[in-house]
Length: 269
Image (cartoon, rainbow, N blue to C red; front, side, top):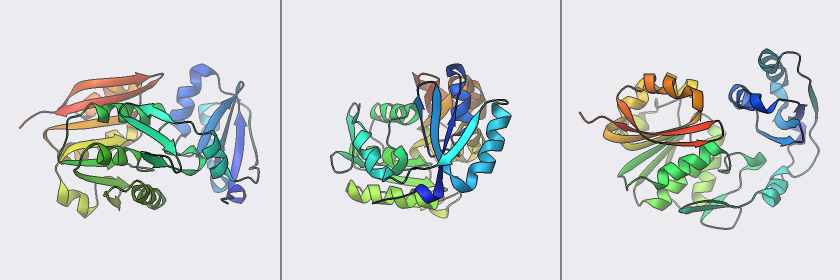
């Protein structure tokens, strides 16, 4: 069993529906999992991040109640797998644990494909023609890299700046019987990523500010006429992304709620 309670806290707060997008954008890099319960938002964070979480929360939502409580001592991975429903995004079907074709058993519902930023990436990938070489940048659980590997018999690379995410992704690659080259890398700095550039397709499901920060590096590693799928974006951030990626034109977009996924084509040289 996987008991995580001693290292984590559960938080409870009340966020108006119209401000939920700000909550996601401003705190998603700290929160491991969160869900609505009535008019409340309940979630889980690492205990060591509690003070930092409270400080950032109070800046975003002054005078808003926020409470912490010890996390109940249960097997969260097992409970998550009981509740996790299959996700159908044609032509992919994603199930937890031992069912196929894409096997994901990430703890605390991380990287399972149910968030619009991920499911819309899957939709965008499904619309692409076969490519020779693709990169999942900020791969997390590896679900997007797995989807590409199962869709095309081609060279797939995956990178994340979190070693634990790469460890988890590699576990998922083995369970799905796919061959994917993965590295821990800050952006595209790893020599292996540079060695294999340029890529026909880069998929990056990251926050807007990170995508803007990495814009020059990402642009340089997509081949002329190649494709870039960007997600983790809110609708109002589209103009900022367009300004950061002037060498690309919009091919398609996917919108769900406040969330936006863009498919961009790089101009030919």
